[in-house]
Image (cartoon, one colour):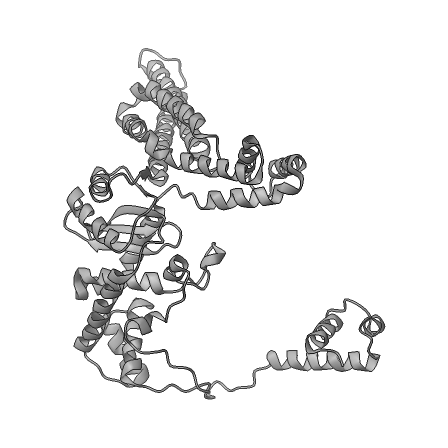
Length: 483
């Protein structure tokens, strides 16, 4: 008798018609009759799976309604479904026939908020290696935020009337008491944030955030592009006006105006083209993760700043802010390149491979994996390294994935906060404690990172499983379904 798994495989092969009945019977050492029997069982199982056997009004399972379960529903509706207080009251009344007051909803959520704050303050943060800091604004007020770059665990989320250095320093000291001691952090050019970190953590480096400067470059490029279109429209309008006159210029100024318009259009087009080229070079080459060594990046960075300075007189009001920002932030913005260089050197030593070849493996990540350039580089590097290629490529890929360049994960919090206006209105600023807890203990439904799928940020950060977030809030275990 064939084992169960072999019988399943046999039936699947028959249904897929991957081989004849005779060949399958010989291959598995069974009779043709036995093969037909297994295929018939599989067909019956498929028919049962795709045939509705229950009526719409049939009882699927039963739940025991208790006070604990109702509290779970209240908190779940507020956090999972973003429901308002009155929405929760209406849901319980209309679907469960349970009458509760707004005060009951508030008390349940207030109790959960207090428990969430305790858990947030007791969490060990010593595993965080890279912290992302930023100031996000909610209802016009600053919210100080800090996120682990690896796990997306939010270790700081607090609303304050001010965002000065003292405020940042106090909260970072509190986080340090929970074990937070990152190798470095990433933040924008905010001086108060950086001063607060220096006061709290001393020499812990604070790298520059690539996201914000790239967005500033994009804004300048888009503005100059719009100005170019405006210059073209003005030139076309004058050209049309002159063409409609149908006569040579008789001193009415059309020719002079048109000449000036053409000159302004040409200057606008040239300036917009040059700035776009420089900013794209900065984003796609100098600030790209897969790029040249730090020393080369610095030379290229300085060259771009010099070229921006040369074009600054053409539009100082718009170009100067970007040029000054780049000039003042060069070392902070390129700090990630130094971290990556050190990792590539370590990989070269560990695999006994020349550093230029390791850099080539890094640069191989630049072209799209479906392009001809990618596979040409792949084949060339594979021919040079032989059996060491795949191990080296995987090590370089992992090193690059673990070298963040921006604090954009913090920006994502802003969008999440906007959907919880009701909690803010009823619970005040303490609602951030509840949201911080929920975001850290709610499992990812999907993620580009395979290691995060089906896990919460806390699980990814600590490497340990934890009870369901409702259970952690003291709302009892989840109720099992009973058919």
